[in-house]
Image (tube, rainbow, N blue to C red):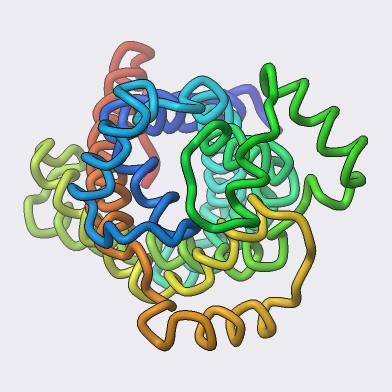
Length: 298
């Protein structure tokens, strides 16, 4: 890999890290609410009600439980994803211009690499996000009582007490969910190329990036949400069910509506997260390239 290619990959990765981490800090209470709605049996079935319930029972700290490990996970995950995606994209661009199908394939490949590298961190993040939480599900409440001092301590305790396999709990749903960023980047890439052509400029307005990021994530979330519930549950509780078995159990327990438990919280959090992330990512990326006197290859 040339120095120029490596610079481009790192620039994309750093921009993705800053954008992703900033968006998560702003919207973290919604992330907490979404996780609770997916895992617990609370009677509160809306985002604002679950947030008020957490504030009442656990205080403001309950809305920011596990923020540190989450930011670490987001930083590593974003760096791996954006570096891999844009590295693959640069290789493809040597032969041809990118298109919708190329975006889909490269985004899926980058997401799969990201899953295998960062799955243990996401397992720890889910556990720490809920440790000490007041949950109503018996199995979830038992797991929430386990205390971890930090990410390294959690990695050690989970691997020691549950086996190394547990650090990759939910990997199959996660690999299936690689279709989520694949669809997201496919839609975003198509919208971006269309808007650049329409406006005849490489750098679009912040509002345009914001809307495109929101639309792309909304489409991807609707398509893959039922698998996201299985992924979250697999990371939190012990035991390893097959993907199909877990989906059937979820439907048997909650009905078909169970496949979209917490969707409102997920959409309000993840769509805004994506919109803010892409806005910051694009603006930071263009700033870096301007400062270095380089041109971004789309």
